[in-house]
Amino acid sequence: MSASEIPADLLFQNSHEWARIDGDIATVGISDHAQAELTDVVFVELPPIGKTVDAGDPTAVVESVKAASDIYSPLSGEVVEVNPAVEGDPSLVNTAPYGDGWIFKIKISKPDQIAGLLTPSAYGTLIG
Amino acid sequence: MSENVLHSPLEAAHLALGAKLIPFGGWAMPVQYTSILNEHAAVREKVGAFDISHMGQVFVTGENHIAWLDRLLTNCISKLQPGEGQYTMMLNEKGGVIDDLIAYRISADETFLVINASMIPEDVAWMEKHLASGVSLRNESDAWAGLAIQGPDAVATFSKLFSNETLPPRNGISKTAGGEIICRTGYTGEDGFEFFCPAAEGIEFFNAFINAGATPCGLGARDTLRLEMCYPLNGNDLSPERSPIEAGLGFFCDLEKPEFIGREVLLNQKQNGPAFKLTAIEVIEKGPPPRSHYPVLSESGEVLGELSSGVLSPTLGKGIAMAYLPAAYTKIGTSLKIDVRGRQFAAVTVKKPFLKSTQSSKKASA
Image (cartoon, one colour):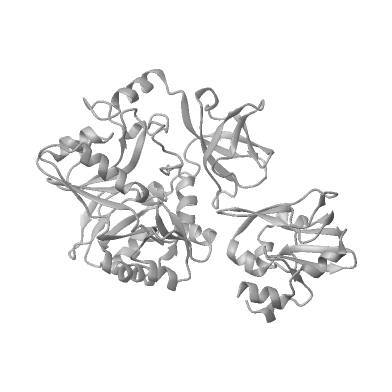
């Protein structure tokens, strides 16, 4: 996928999670590149609401037929919402990684971390 | 991948098809081309083509070779007629499984063994260590490419490539006019055959089967297909520390034979009942897919062992697994729990296999 196909309003981290910032809330999911590498997502383990996480903490688990992969929170904060739709239909992570396949939302506690995330073009370069 | 990794003669074809390669048994092999779920479905519903070039081929000849194989392997080779094959195992002196394999009598004076990729050096060393006079071995593992063509349309696919040839009957073996070896066996629970040709011709035949309608399938689908049938995977479900009796494979051990390596241990286990049994387990609570090494607990929370294999069954849509459990917990319907990252999910022991083979009914209606 070229950088031009990555939604412009997202920020990324090296481990292929994206964050969409809206005020003090960040919605988190995995990139299209990551879902293509995983293929066939069959299970998503969501974090409990209210859980406090630091940037880089394993916060959810996405499982393909072959492997379980930790999803690391791109930012520090408190989990305020999870996406029940991906529990019922895990393949949403494959079919709509930047839309209905989002995984959790956190209330950002350290906004200065946002500057450390990758722009869509920087992430596009990373995945080549 | 390490530099010592072995490469299939079909590797260029896999890469051209966009396969993801992973290390398996010392080999770089395709785990999937597009999707494990789609490849799995292709085999259950139509036909798939697997590269099995990593598996080993050993030819055994000589006037004493049948008697020798009967002392080396658990099943009874001397009951086979030329053209017939059987699943069998090679055991250590403790009755533990070194390898599981299929032995085919190609002719009165030659037997063909297909062994697991990761075990080729060890199997051959074991056979050579126990070699007897009047027996010769030829390890031709590097010379052959192997394909498994599996699924309800496998026979039709075969006919498209070999219009003048007939497939051997179930478990049988034959050679085509061109010298390729055809075995009516597989590791999926579907009808199909395994095909061996000179390594240099592998890509040509692989592509020909794909052009004839077979979906290229990787090791990911091979694993989900075999586990639905409770076919063991050596290294996961079989080990030098576990016997065929514990693995539930007593059917493939001919204890009537006066001797074979490991026989005394099996006889004893069969008479007294094994302490552990490889048990089929179904997850009954919605949850993450079971995977090998996850702990298995009794209903009261006592750790009983760990899963030897586990997967979310694509056909059944639920978690299926196997584990060696103490005999007291192996009765069908026993409630268990599987620990996944510290959370416990309800499971129950069930009858093997998870998926009842559709092969016999299809044959009957054909």
